[in-house]
Image (tube, rainbow, N blue to C red; front, side, top):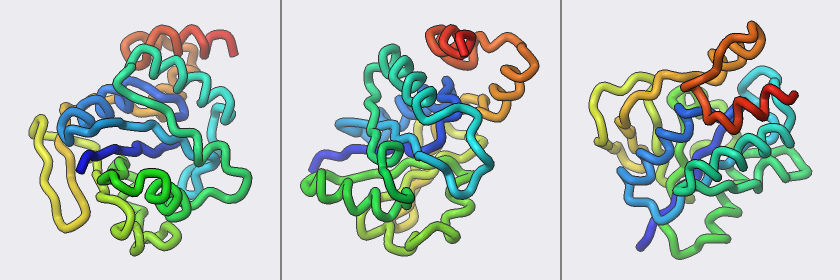
Length: 186
């Protein structure tokens, strides 16, 4: 059975940490496809700096450079409240013959017990957690339906980038040049 992955997040903004890690996970798990899946309004985080359309614009620029990745708009386009469990049910309907991985950062994983119906996630997906700090490169360990991927560390955060934007500091090396130019036009 072939496998696909969905890497959820706010991508506020998307950066090399997301993009390079996503490519590494796709290769590590031998995924046929890996979709970046931006959320509409994250329940467990502060308000977003960039609008939904701006985040989509930046993701579209990113996947032009990182053509191994694709964009899934289902959460950001949803008219009602967006809960991951509803998304997972829909993904399973859309891809009934695929093994499905949901990829998330360790910070999101640490709040998973507070997510709506999180105990049901294992019925729909295998969970892949990306630790904040990674010592080993290119390995994965698993416990039941949860995998802990140890990919090469890309030490970049959206918080760091937003701070640099606020302070009008150089963003080179943190995100693709096309996205830097886009941010400069805002």
